[in-house]
Image (tube, rainbow, N blue to C red; front, side, top):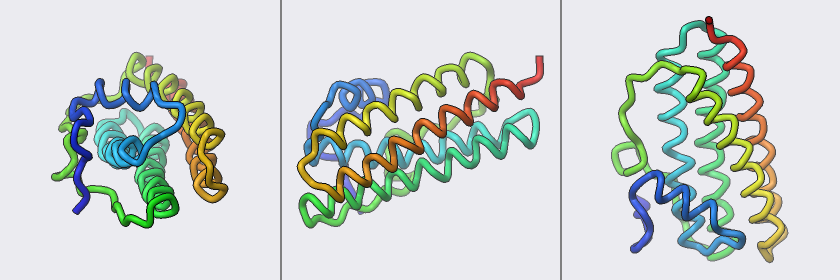
Length: 162
């Protein structure tokens, strides 16, 4: 079972602030990102479960599935850089997984659009600054999907009832 590295934030806002400030990720940064990406799956699925229509539900579920794919991709980056296996944590071992009974609303979806676009830019920066071609390729795949998540969140926003 993977453990968060010592000294990294366990509060979601602080963890995202740390990650967002990194231009060249350390192994600890990558491990933190595995936890954050893995928590994205449960976050999106919780929103999807309360979506006001099936179209929004499908968009949010797709993003959730890909969040876990991002976590798995970052584990491959860790393996490529260090040789270490670092599988994504289960929800019950992830401090960033939070229970939510909120239905998706305009403000939340707008925040997701911005966050996903920012995630795309972050992964691109990491890919540019990492000295390993395969790791950079994997990070660029995550960047592309992050931007696609932003597009889906924008589509969900357009489908929200007035």
